[in-house]
Length: 200
Image: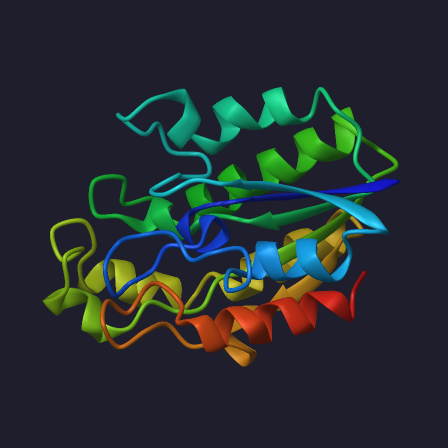
């Protein structure tokens, strides 16, 4: 059976903006894929709340993308869905766009080096909206975070082209919840799953 790794942050984990719980398997995009392709693919759900891509997260290895990714890459996958990076825009990290590009590129480069035959699908996250400034995450993200989130899609696309990856711009597919401007409602998860299906 073919294997798909879904590596990402809270929107891969299935964070519910209404109450902070996890969406069930029928609601989060990774779970929807698992249910649809149960007989064809083994779906590994490797999302984690508050996981950064390349910034050193004080919560530890599990929450720091570049540190935990090698553990997953000890296995072989036919497809790797890469959906991470928005948490690096937190005001505590505040990377420049150049640092952001280098950080994301290094992760993709490491995947290519470890698993050269795996197909990679890069998901560019939806822009953070102003609603985050009135949410529970207002102490983590600021206006600069919002503005930078609007500038990173070309970075993901550039890296996808450079490393022969498939690319999906979530800005064209799903909008963050009005509750926190960051996480997706159930209907948006369905849209994401449907869009990924076209790339499998």
